[in-house]
Image 1 (cartoon, rainbow, N blue to C red):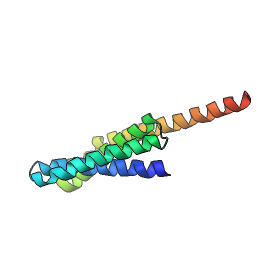
Image 2 (image 1 turned 180 degrees about the vertical axis):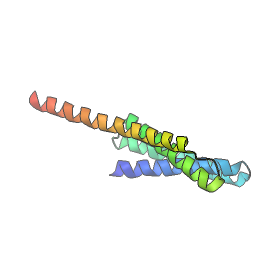
Image 3 (image 1 turned 90 degrees about the vertical axis):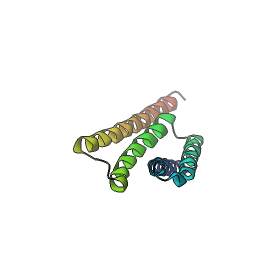
Image 4 (image 1 turned 90 degrees about the horizontal axis):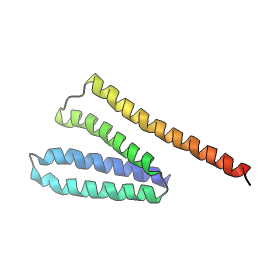
Length: 119
């Protein structure tokens, strides 16, 4: 559970930093939040890996969810375009990462069965 909470924190901090970067273009006072958000995000992501989550899954979810949330929130906050093809792309990216996670779980289960059979 801890690794999932850390991953959620890493994603939210990265999205906050990225949106703040956009805001800092017009208002430089946002730059400290940009720096704090990215430092916090990478620190949290490091904690996720220390907690035992596989790198491919952690980075994939962090990246995919970060892209999706940033695109959605940039549309709401800054009026950026969000088209149907973009929405489909976001869904496909997240679905791809979930497939990686499911494949990893299947590989772990197979490995455990094999190790159990050889004992």
